[in-house]
Length: 275
Image 1: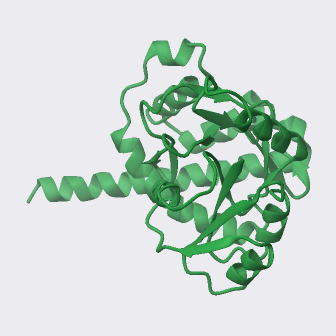
Image 2: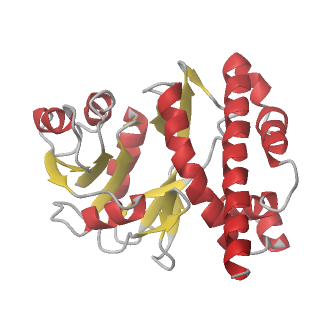
Protein backbone atom coordinates (compact mmCIF):
# COMPACT_ATOMS: atom_id res chain seq x y z
CA UNK A 1 0.00 0.00 0.00
CA UNK A 2 2.92 2.36 0.70
CA UNK A 3 6.37 2.29 -0.93
CA UNK A 4 9.34 3.58 1.06
CA UNK A 5 12.40 5.31 -0.40
CA UNK A 6 15.52 5.64 1.76
CA UNK A 7 18.58 7.58 0.60
CA UNK A 8 21.90 6.23 1.85
CA UNK A 9 25.65 6.75 1.79
CA UNK A 10 27.64 4.79 4.39
CA UNK A 11 24.65 4.52 6.74
CA UNK A 12 25.38 1.12 8.30
CA UNK A 13 25.01 2.63 11.78
CA UNK A 14 21.62 4.26 11.16
CA UNK A 15 19.96 2.03 8.59
CA UNK A 16 18.82 -0.89 10.82
CA UNK A 17 16.79 1.45 13.05
CA UNK A 18 15.26 3.18 10.04
CA UNK A 19 14.30 -0.02 8.20
CA UNK A 20 12.91 -1.64 11.34
CA UNK A 21 10.51 1.30 11.67
CA UNK A 22 9.03 0.73 8.18
CA UNK A 23 8.41 -2.99 8.50
CA UNK A 24 4.74 -2.25 7.71
CA UNK A 25 5.71 -1.77 4.05
CA UNK A 26 6.33 -4.62 1.60
CA UNK A 27 8.19 -2.32 -0.81
CA UNK A 28 11.29 -0.57 0.51
CA UNK A 29 13.77 0.87 -1.98
CA UNK A 30 17.20 1.89 -0.70
CA UNK A 31 18.81 4.27 -3.19
CA UNK A 32 22.50 4.15 -2.36
CA UNK A 33 25.20 6.58 -3.51
CA UNK A 34 28.10 4.12 -3.46
CA UNK A 35 28.55 3.11 0.17
CA UNK A 36 31.83 1.52 1.20
CA UNK A 37 30.52 0.11 4.49
CA UNK A 38 27.86 -2.55 5.13
CA UNK A 39 24.91 -0.36 4.10
CA UNK A 40 23.94 -2.45 1.07
CA UNK A 41 24.25 -5.76 2.95
CA UNK A 42 22.09 -4.43 5.79
CA UNK A 43 19.46 -3.19 3.37
CA UNK A 44 19.19 -6.59 1.71
CA UNK A 45 19.13 -8.33 5.08
CA UNK A 46 15.99 -6.33 5.90
CA UNK A 47 14.42 -7.33 2.59
CA UNK A 48 14.84 -3.96 0.88
CA UNK A 49 15.58 -3.57 -2.80
CA UNK A 50 18.81 -1.70 -3.53
CA UNK A 51 19.56 0.62 -6.43
CA UNK A 52 22.75 2.64 -6.90
CA UNK A 53 23.02 6.17 -8.25
CA UNK A 54 25.83 8.69 -7.90
CA UNK A 55 24.71 11.54 -5.66
CA UNK A 56 24.19 14.95 -7.24
CA UNK A 57 21.52 16.43 -4.94
CA UNK A 58 18.79 15.32 -2.58
CA UNK A 59 16.06 16.47 -4.95
CA UNK A 60 17.51 14.63 -7.93
CA UNK A 61 18.02 11.45 -5.89
CA UNK A 62 14.40 11.49 -4.74
CA UNK A 63 13.12 12.24 -8.24
CA UNK A 64 15.21 9.40 -9.66
CA UNK A 65 13.68 7.04 -7.10
CA UNK A 66 10.18 8.17 -8.07
CA UNK A 67 10.95 7.23 -11.68
CA UNK A 68 11.93 3.70 -10.67
CA UNK A 69 9.53 0.79 -10.43
CA UNK A 70 7.67 1.24 -7.15
CA UNK A 71 4.81 -1.09 -6.26
CA UNK A 72 2.41 1.33 -4.61
CA UNK A 73 0.82 4.68 -5.55
CA UNK A 74 1.82 6.33 -2.25
CA UNK A 75 5.51 6.91 -1.45
CA UNK A 76 7.25 7.99 1.76
CA UNK A 77 10.74 9.49 1.46
CA UNK A 78 13.20 9.03 4.32
CA UNK A 79 16.82 9.64 5.19
CA UNK A 80 18.60 6.78 6.93
CA UNK A 81 18.78 8.68 10.24
CA UNK A 82 14.98 9.08 10.39
CA UNK A 83 12.47 6.79 12.07
CA UNK A 84 8.73 6.31 11.50
CA UNK A 85 6.84 5.98 14.79
CA UNK A 86 3.92 3.50 15.10
CA UNK A 87 1.48 6.43 15.31
CA UNK A 88 2.81 7.94 12.10
CA UNK A 89 2.78 4.56 10.37
CA UNK A 90 -0.89 4.12 11.27
CA UNK A 91 -1.70 7.60 9.94
CA UNK A 92 0.12 6.93 6.65
CA UNK A 93 -1.73 3.66 6.13
CA UNK A 94 -5.07 5.34 6.77
CA UNK A 95 -4.32 8.03 4.18
CA UNK A 96 -3.15 5.51 1.59
CA UNK A 97 -6.41 3.59 2.13
CA UNK A 98 -8.62 6.66 1.69
CA UNK A 99 -10.47 7.84 -1.39
CA UNK A 100 -8.99 9.79 -4.30
CA UNK A 101 -10.18 13.06 -2.74
CA UNK A 102 -7.22 13.10 -0.33
CA UNK A 103 -4.48 15.71 -0.85
CA UNK A 104 -1.88 14.45 -3.31
CA UNK A 105 1.01 15.04 -0.87
CA UNK A 106 1.61 15.66 2.82
CA UNK A 107 4.14 17.61 4.85
CA UNK A 108 5.55 16.03 7.98
CA UNK A 109 7.38 17.48 10.99
CA UNK A 110 10.39 15.84 12.64
CA UNK A 111 11.50 15.54 16.23
CA UNK A 112 15.20 16.37 16.28
CA UNK A 113 17.11 14.24 18.79
CA UNK A 114 20.40 15.37 20.37
CA UNK A 115 22.25 13.21 22.91
CA UNK A 116 19.10 11.34 23.80
CA UNK A 117 16.97 14.48 24.21
CA UNK A 118 14.23 15.81 21.97
CA UNK A 119 15.03 19.40 21.03
CA UNK A 120 11.40 20.45 21.19
CA UNK A 121 12.21 24.17 21.22
CA UNK A 122 15.76 24.70 19.93
CA UNK A 123 15.15 22.18 17.13
CA UNK A 124 12.48 24.43 15.58
CA UNK A 125 9.70 21.89 16.05
CA UNK A 126 7.55 21.68 14.05
CA UNK A 127 9.59 22.37 10.89
CA UNK A 128 7.79 20.72 7.99
CA UNK A 129 8.93 19.03 4.79
CA UNK A 130 6.81 17.38 2.12
CA UNK A 131 7.91 13.74 2.15
CA UNK A 132 4.77 11.69 1.51
CA UNK A 133 2.73 11.73 -1.67
CA UNK A 134 1.44 10.07 -4.76
CA UNK A 135 4.11 8.64 -7.01
CA UNK A 136 2.56 10.17 -10.11
CA UNK A 137 2.75 13.78 -8.90
CA UNK A 138 5.25 14.23 -6.06
CA UNK A 139 8.53 15.68 -7.33
CA UNK A 140 11.26 17.77 -5.68
CA UNK A 141 13.47 20.76 -6.46
CA UNK A 142 16.83 21.69 -4.96
CA UNK A 143 16.83 24.37 -2.26
CA UNK A 144 20.17 25.10 -0.59
CA UNK A 145 21.62 21.85 0.70
CA UNK A 146 18.21 20.19 0.83
CA UNK A 147 15.05 19.99 -1.19
CA UNK A 148 11.42 21.01 -1.22
CA UNK A 149 8.38 19.94 -3.18
CA UNK A 150 8.09 21.13 -6.77
CA UNK A 151 5.64 23.90 -7.55
CA UNK A 152 2.04 23.16 -8.51
CA UNK A 153 1.99 19.49 -7.62
CA UNK A 154 -1.52 19.87 -6.20
CA UNK A 155 -3.11 20.09 -2.78
CA UNK A 156 -0.82 19.47 0.20
CA UNK A 157 -1.97 18.27 3.62
CA UNK A 158 -0.20 18.10 6.98
CA UNK A 159 0.39 14.90 8.93
CA UNK A 160 -0.48 14.87 12.61
CA UNK A 161 2.46 12.77 13.75
CA UNK A 162 6.17 13.53 13.21
CA UNK A 163 9.20 11.57 12.16
CA UNK A 164 12.02 11.12 14.67
CA UNK A 165 15.32 12.49 13.37
CA UNK A 166 18.64 11.24 14.81
CA UNK A 167 20.75 13.87 13.06
CA UNK A 168 23.70 13.51 15.47
CA UNK A 169 23.89 9.72 15.55
CA UNK A 170 27.36 9.68 13.95
CA UNK A 171 28.81 12.29 16.30
CA UNK A 172 29.46 16.01 16.39
CA UNK A 173 32.43 15.73 14.03
CA UNK A 174 30.24 14.25 11.32
CA UNK A 175 27.62 16.96 11.90
CA UNK A 176 30.17 19.75 11.44
CA UNK A 177 31.70 18.06 8.41
CA UNK A 178 28.31 17.91 6.71
CA UNK A 179 27.39 21.45 7.68
CA UNK A 180 30.63 22.82 6.31
CA UNK A 181 29.45 21.48 2.95
CA UNK A 182 25.89 22.66 3.48
CA UNK A 183 27.06 26.20 4.33
CA UNK A 184 28.35 26.79 0.81
CA UNK A 185 25.05 25.68 -0.70
CA UNK A 186 23.06 27.81 1.75
CA UNK A 187 25.17 30.84 0.82
CA UNK A 188 24.40 30.26 -2.84
CA UNK A 189 20.73 29.92 -2.00
CA UNK A 190 20.77 33.16 0.04
CA UNK A 191 22.06 35.05 -2.99
CA UNK A 192 19.02 33.93 -4.99
CA UNK A 193 16.31 34.58 -2.40
CA UNK A 194 13.72 37.23 -3.11
CA UNK A 195 12.94 40.14 -0.79
CA UNK A 196 10.71 38.93 2.06
CA UNK A 197 7.06 39.88 1.76
CA UNK A 198 4.90 41.15 4.61
CA UNK A 199 2.12 38.80 3.49
CA UNK A 200 4.44 35.83 3.85
CA UNK A 201 5.71 36.88 7.26
CA UNK A 202 2.24 37.50 8.71
CA UNK A 203 0.21 34.95 6.76
CA UNK A 204 -1.42 31.79 8.17
CA UNK A 205 0.81 29.29 6.35
CA UNK A 206 3.64 28.18 8.71
CA UNK A 207 5.83 27.05 5.81
CA UNK A 208 5.46 30.42 4.04
CA UNK A 209 6.26 32.24 7.30
CA UNK A 210 9.41 30.19 7.82
CA UNK A 211 10.63 30.82 4.28
CA UNK A 212 9.90 34.56 4.52
CA UNK A 213 11.73 34.70 7.85
CA UNK A 214 14.78 33.15 6.22
CA UNK A 215 14.71 35.81 3.51
CA UNK A 216 14.53 38.51 6.18
CA UNK A 217 17.35 36.93 8.20
CA UNK A 218 19.65 37.04 5.14
CA UNK A 219 19.57 40.83 5.34
CA UNK A 220 20.30 41.29 9.03
CA UNK A 221 23.72 42.07 10.60
CA UNK A 222 25.46 39.91 13.22
CA UNK A 223 23.65 36.82 11.99
CA UNK A 224 25.54 34.22 14.08
CA UNK A 225 24.62 36.04 17.29
CA UNK A 226 21.06 36.57 16.12
CA UNK A 227 20.74 32.91 15.23
CA UNK A 228 21.87 31.91 18.70
CA UNK A 229 19.42 34.34 20.33
CA UNK A 230 16.59 33.18 18.08
CA UNK A 231 17.27 29.52 18.79
CA UNK A 232 17.99 29.81 22.50
CA UNK A 233 15.75 32.68 23.64
CA UNK A 234 13.02 33.40 21.10
CA UNK A 235 12.42 29.72 20.38
CA UNK A 236 12.90 29.00 24.11
CA UNK A 237 15.75 26.57 23.54
CA UNK A 238 16.70 27.10 27.18
CA UNK A 239 13.76 24.84 28.04
CA UNK A 240 15.65 21.99 26.35
CA UNK A 241 18.33 22.26 29.05
CA UNK A 242 22.01 21.80 28.31
CA UNK A 243 21.23 20.14 24.96
CA UNK A 244 19.35 23.25 23.86
CA UNK A 245 22.28 25.52 24.73
CA UNK A 246 24.82 23.39 22.86
CA UNK A 247 22.59 23.12 19.82
CA UNK A 248 22.02 26.89 19.74
CA UNK A 249 25.82 27.39 19.82
CA UNK A 250 26.24 24.94 16.96
CA UNK A 251 23.63 26.73 14.86
CA UNK A 252 25.45 30.03 15.48
CA UNK A 253 28.68 28.45 14.22
CA UNK A 254 26.84 27.08 11.20
CA UNK A 255 25.54 30.58 10.44
CA UNK A 256 29.12 31.87 10.69
CA UNK A 257 30.17 29.28 8.09
CA UNK A 258 27.37 30.47 5.80
CA UNK A 259 28.30 34.14 6.22
CA UNK A 260 31.95 33.44 5.38
CA UNK A 261 30.87 31.77 2.17
CA UNK A 262 28.64 34.76 1.36
CA UNK A 263 31.63 37.10 1.80
CA UNK A 264 33.82 34.84 -0.29
CA UNK A 265 31.26 34.72 -3.11
CA UNK A 266 30.90 38.51 -3.05
CA UNK A 267 34.68 38.99 -3.28
CA UNK A 268 34.87 36.60 -6.22
CA UNK A 269 32.04 38.43 -7.97
CA UNK A 270 33.72 41.81 -7.43
CA UNK A 271 37.00 40.41 -8.78
CA UNK A 272 35.28 39.03 -11.86
CA UNK A 273 33.36 42.28 -12.44
CA UNK A 274 36.59 44.27 -12.36
CA UNK A 275 38.22 42.21 -15.09
